[in-house]
Amino acid sequence: MLLAGSPVRVYVEANCVQSYFHEVKTFGRHCLLVTGKNSARRSGALSEVCHSMLEQDIIYSEWDSITPNPTVEECSTAGDFARKNGADMILGIGGGSAMDAAKAIAVFAANPELDEASFYAKDWKREPLPIVLVGTTAGTGSEVTKVSVLTDSTGRKHSIKDDKLLPVIAFGDARYTESMPREVRLSTGLDTLMHCLESYFNKLATEASQKESIIGISMAAPLLMRFVKGESLNLEQQERLYEASLHGGLSIYTASTCFPHKLGYWLTETFGIPHGFACAEFMDRLLAHAREAVPESCHRLEEETGVPFEMLNDLCRRALPQHNHRVFPQEMEKILPRWENDSSLLNTVGVVTMRDVERFMSRYEWND
Ligand code: NAP
Ligand code: FE
Image 1 (cartoon, rainbow, N blue to C red):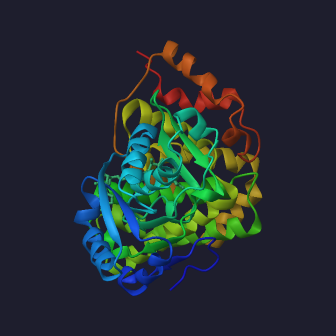
Image 2: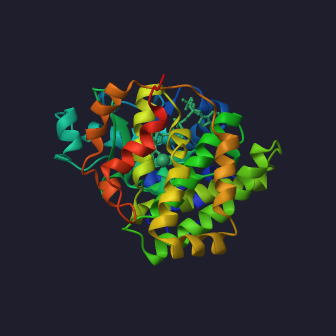
């Protein structure tokens, strides 16, 4: 089944790789497979994709070492590898990290002269190679977004957004998400909820994007609550979580994320907190801010999803791992200017001042 309302051709059903892979060969004959170290294999996706490649007479080579929060440098090196192997398309299998890396590798493979600055400046002389994605987490929605989030040479995460980063086709088979460890399930599930909430409380939101947010939250929140309380999820429930992640992706496609994602990047860079958890650390702040700035909109969201904010906060309390990461106030002072005039702060509903950001971040200050 094709996902309705998606700008990308995304199949969402069990065994969709086997059923529709013949469409891939219209985009290329020499493929570079891009994966992380383990999940593509462990999820079962890799062997099914390789089998379909053989069936369709597509030649492939493999790049299997993408790290979580991938760097521009590794994508550039993998781009060289793709070129040397004569790849004419890139297929990423994994969570957001491998999928986002695949998008960037498609750019580097076609543009050998590109350095980090010209990559971010989108000074791309040639079109990226066609991108095919196979998701293994129920979280980022990267399958349907034109975004790639990479870590630069100074260790900072930046998202780059361009229509050319949209995959030509994506496969969403929730069976591949069954192998996710509990921590990955929770972190990626919270990422989905953050996409829905941050795009909903966003000045760029439209009626259509808010509808996607509402669908995503009503599908994901009750299931994540059951999961965090210790229930295991059957395949049908995992399919719903996966679908919710795509609705989250569609919601940010138009409306984008707001301040929690930007502040969350810093937590990941500084303390290595997984992406979904890092963003969800600011969920309570976002909900409290929205309650003040747009009370009517909050009311509508709670009504239409059947999910009260208290339940979302409770979910975070139960799901977020405890940690004692702190920085000294002098360090915090140095960090704050990075968010000045940041578009994701400006795009948040109401007004988010630098004083607010200081308040949001104050829980990470070392106050002995
Ligand atoms: P991830 O970083 O892709 O994966 C996290 C860990 O889970 C990795 O160790 C991975 O293993 C493992 N894993 C993934 N799927 C698994 C499975 N089915 N079974 C067992 N283990 C599995 O996590 P993610 O949360 O999906 O992606 C996060 C990245 O996406 C961040 O860089 C974030 O900034 C970005 N992001 C992108 C968008 C977008 O629109 N493009 C949106 C939000 C976030 P392997 O290393 O072996 O693969
Ligand atoms: Fe995210």
